[in-house]
Amino acid sequence: MYLTYIFFRAMVLLAQIMPYSLLYWFSDIVTFFLYRIIGYRKNLIFSQLKKCFPEKSESEIAKIAHDSYQNLSDLLVETFKGMTFVESDIYARFRKKGEGWAQANAVTASGSTFIGTGAHIANWEWAVLAMQVYLEGSVLGIYKPIQN
Image (cartoon, rainbow, N blue to C red; front, side, top):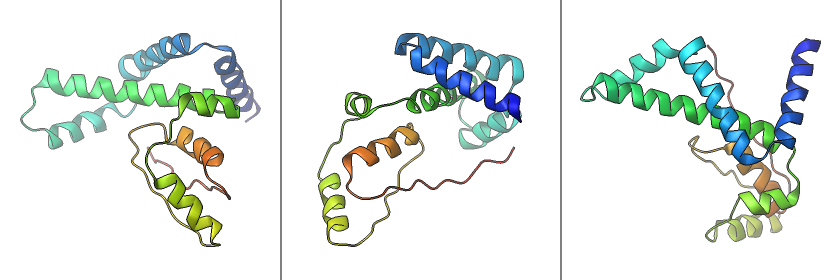
């Protein structure tokens, strides 16, 4: 358990000092290992993609799968980077749009609570960090762990 902790802290420290261009280069290496070497959940991913896109060729399915691994790797390294964010990083990386933020603040200012949901297509960890900056009141992120 201690080695896992040391590895985790080392990854956070590495992400903290790494510029974004190098961070995403590192993500490409992680993608290579997950997709080509380890094959993390590869059979499951390919079987599900074939069910979802029966009209796609094998090469198109492989491209979609690779892009999914790239997204996973980007999220992984961005999560480590996000653990070192300060408020100015949030303002630089996460732009609020629309009236939803003001409406959410109006709800919490009246003493009520609200539940906001989002798709898992982008880095929701950064979104939770941004909510802590842009929203008044407490923010709580809830998730369901995946099972292999």
